[in-house]
Length: 114
Image (tube, rainbow, N blue to C red; front, side, top):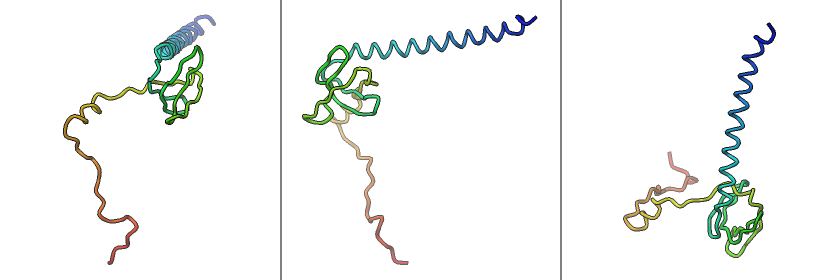
């Protein structure tokens, strides 16, 4: 009698654990694939939000240029993702570029009469 009550609970818990581990394995494999595909010159984001260009790659570390002439060493595990250039950015350079800016005619701090 007790087994009949706990059997559906055990099945649900087992299924949850199975699907959770599958999702974690897929995420880990995607991270490993990213780290293995890194090349010198790639632009990346780190897990702390820093952007930079890879200047050197070792087994566990990368040299990251974060400003012109400023190169720091980071663990590969700190790389979150690669920055990819949008194709639209290249198209804008060739043709007409429309401005989406707003022209201000008055300073926001100016006092108005009345």
